[in-house]
Structure formats: structure tokens, C-alpha cells
Image (cartoon, rainbow, N blue to C red; front, top):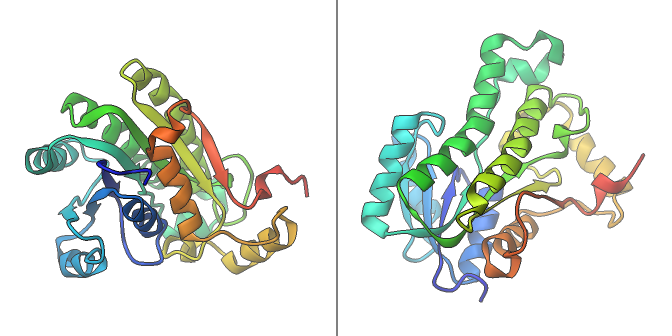
Length: 257
């Protein structure tokens, strides 16, 4: 199995329909030991029920992944209780509802900062704290999630597209910084999937229809398919790949119309 004897931290799991859960399922089935972070102490019982199928997994609450001290505290606890880890999956993003529903030009300063802090800076912070606390084993792999709205205009994606563009640029700079230590950094640009976050995008169902009609494979992707790509990137099979945005979207990104 691709992830035998590897410990993977998955940040931002929410429910069984999330991409993070699909990644967890694939990683676990490929031999990984899993650690999770989630938001909200009040969600503890729900998260523990969610991850009980992943035998031996642990979970830690992290209320603000863009808060330096909170991330340091949680990562230190993870290291103290589990030792070093082999990979991190960053599945955290958020924008204010009004900034998704209104035209982009009306994005507030607070909304702009919030989306970029949570969706992009949190990955930079995650990478830095992991390095500073020496929590990563040799040849570790960091993976984050992005979307084609980073480079193409999609109605209703707005400020999140800007945040994902910042995230993708961060992947390249982090890959250069951490490559000196043999640590790889990549992003997966998944096709549209019916997740809780997707509900905030206007007319999301029409996006699914377009991908099914226009993509070379004429089908939408599943969380498990994206999870399998993440497993590959977390494994030694991808040890020559870093600084990349890997599309898992049935080929939709190559189409001109």
C-alpha cells in the first residue's frame, strides 16, 4: 500500500461529503495512520463519530487555522502525542456569504482579508509552524486544495478565486523554500463536488452540468477520486513532483469552451 507506515494530518474535516473525508478514506485504505483537526469544540462528538471507521485515528480542535499561536499550540500537542508526521493535507477555506453573492467589485476590505487569511495564509502558517517545530519526517509531503476559479472567472466564486490564486502562488514559493529539506508542496484542483462549502456558490448545480457536458471524460469527479490523487501526492510515488497544481477534474480545465 502506498502509505504504509506513514502518519498523515488532515486539517479541516467536516462531514462524509467533504473532500477531506474522501482523502482520509483513500489514505487510510492505503495504510496511513490519520490525525485530524476540526473547528469547534462543540463538534467533537460529531467528528469522533465521523472518523471512527479510521481505526487508531486521533482528532484535535483548531478553531482558527490562521492564528499563529493556536496553530503552534495544536501542532506542538500533535507532535508530543504522536511524534513526527509524514504529510499534511490542508482542506481549509472560507469567505463571507455576501462576498460570494455580490459582484466581486463590492468585496469589503474585511471580506478580502478574511478570505485570504483563512484560505491562503493558513497554509503558509501551517507550513512554517511544521518546519519550526520539526514535526515533519524526511521526504514529507504537503497538499492543499484549490479550484479553477483561481484562474478563470466563475460567477459566484468572486473573492474565493482571488484567495485560491494566492494559495497557488504560495504553493510555488513554499515548494522552493522547503525543497531544500526534501519536503514537497503541491495543490489539487478538484472539479466541482457537492460539498457543504459548494452550497455557498450561486447556481452550483449548473456548474456540475457544464462539467459533465464539456469535460473530455463527460463526468463529474468524486471525493474518492480526488482522495486517490492526494494519496499519490502524499506517497513516495510522487517524490519528483513539487510546486504543482494537479487537476482532478475529468479534464475540464483543458477545454476552451
